[in-house]
Length: 636
Image 1 (tube, rainbow, N blue to C red):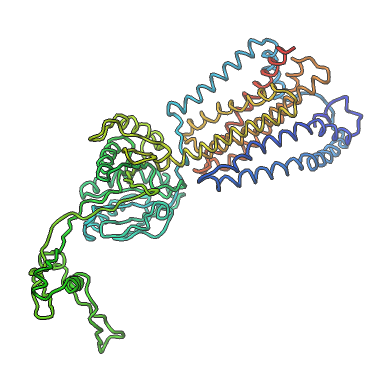
Image 2: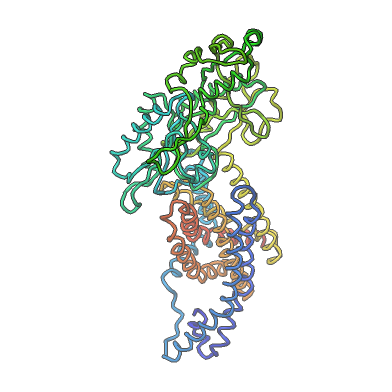
C-alpha cells in the first residue's frame, strides 16, 4: 500500500511494485521468523512436571510461524495485488500524505535524534521504569506463584481426628461442619463420607486421599452452584468457609483442611516441610517445633503433620508355664480371642420365609469387645478342661507403635500446611518461616537445624529439614524456563550476528526485550494477578515478537542508509514508516490475547502478551532507533 501511494510509482506496473515491496521485507522477515522460532523452541526441552505441558507450545508455534511466512510471501502479495488492482481501476487518487500515527512518531523521535542528550535522557528514564517494575516483584507487590487459583465447581473438606477416635464421633463432627455449610448461598449440595475416602478426583490421586480409611477420618465433598450464578470464585468461597469451620474443628479436636481442586501442581500439599534425622523420636520433636511455627505464621492455614496420635494398646501376655500345666496352648487362646473380637462363621440359617440363607456369625457384643477387661471370663477349652482366659494371660497396658514414613528410603516426618490470606504464594510463607527457623537449635545439638531448599540431605547423621510441596515444583519450572530463556538469547544473538555481520547490532536489537517488563509487571500488579509460569511463557513468546519488530526496524534503517540518506534522517524515516505496521501488529496481539484474559489459568499469558507488546510499541520502538543512532554515530 505504501509503494502504491508514492507519487513516483504512479506509472509503474502494479505487479512490479508488489514484487519490489515483498523483496524489501524478504530478508528481515525470514530472520524475524527464525528468531520467533528460536524464542519458543527451547521450551521443548523443559524437564520435570511441566515438560509434557510445554512441549506442544514450540511445536505449534514453530509450525504456525513457518506457515505464516509462506502466507506472507505468497498469499498476502497475491491478495494485495488483486485488491490494489481493483483500487487502481476505480481511479483512486495516489498521494504521499502520511497518516496521524506516522506524523506523531516523527514529532517525538526527531528531537531525540537531533539532540542526543534528549535520547540519553529517554533511555535513562525507561531504565528507571524497568528498575521500578522489577522492584514490584522484589517488594512483593507482584506475587510469584507456580499457577494461579482456578474457578472450579467443587472442593473438599478433609476431616482428621486423632487415631483411636470412634466412627460415631468422627461422623458427628463431620455433620456439624456440614451443617455450617448449609448457610452458604453458593453451596449447591454436599456429601459426607465418614470412615472412608470420597470418590476419586485430582486431590485423591496426587495427595493420596483415596488411601484414607479408618474410623478417625471423614471427607465432605462440596458442590457449588454454576460459576455464572455466583459472584465469587471458588477460591474466595473456600477461604471464607475455612474461617467459619475452624472453630468447630478446634472445639472437637479435629484437624480440618479445605482442599480445592487445583489446576496444579500435583504435590502432597501446598506447603511441605520434610524432617530428617538419625532418631525418629528426635525427628518428631523437631517436626512439632516446626508445626508450632507454621501455626504462628500469618497466612499459613490447615496445619497438620504425618504423625499418628498415641493410641492405647492392650497386650494379652500368654503365660506359657501355667498354660502348659492346664493343657492350654497359644493357638487356642488366639483362636478364642479372634472369635470374640472379629467373629467366626457358625453356619447358615435356612428361614422358611427368607429368599436366601442368612449367615450366622458368632462373636461377643460390642460393649464387651470394647473393654478388654471384660474378656477375662472368656472360657478357653483345652484337652482336659475349660479355664477362664484370665487364668492363662495377663493384660499389659501400653502405647501402640506408629507408622514411619520414608522418602527415597530415608525416614521422614512431614509437616504440611496451605497458604491463604494476603500472600497466597508459598514462596513468601517459606521466606517468613526460614527467618524463624534459622536460629532454631534442636535439643541436644550444638548447631542450628540445617535447612535445605532443593535436595534431600546426603546423610541423616545430623537432623535437617527440606522444603517441598509447591515450592519445589515452582523452583524446577522457573529454573528450566530461565535456562530455556538463556538459550533463547544465545540463539537470537547468533542468528542476528550471522545476518547483520556485526557483534554490536544484536545488542541493540535485543535491548528491547527487558523493556517489555515495564508493561508486564505493572499490569500484573494493577490487575491483582500472580506472575505465574504462564506469565513467563508469555514473556518468552513476546520476546520473539519484540526482536522480530526490532530486526525489521534495524534492517530498514540500513536499507535507507544504503539509499544515501544521512544517519539521523534514516533512523527517523525508518521508524516512522515502520511504526504503523508495528502498531497494527501490537493491536493484533492485544486482540488475540484478550480472548484468554478472563481465564484464571492463562490470565498471566494474556497479560504478558498484551501489555508486553504495548510497552514494546511505546518504548522499544523508540529505544531501538535511539540506541542505533548513538552507537552508529559514535563509530562514525
